[in-house]
Image 1 (cartoon, rainbow, N blue to C red):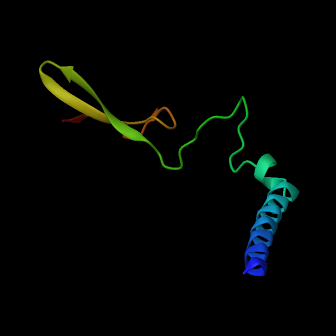
Image 2 (image 1 turned 180 degrees about the horizontal axis):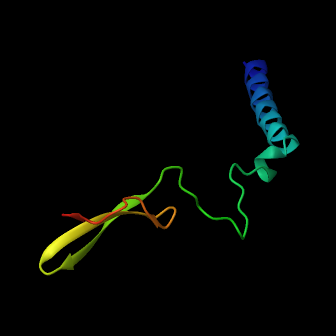
Length: 81
């Protein structure tokens, strides 16, 4: 019984020591970052973000598609909304 208990305690301590060894040997846990940041970086969307701009002339509402991504008109003319 005493041998069994001693073997269990020794194996438990060995497992803890081995797990610490794996963590501290592999420096990627402390140095690697999945996302790199820089001071001059901007967020750029993959898709074109658009929305309608509205104006009203003489009680008639007009709309035109605007690209927020490229800051330009996507439709050539104003249309009645």
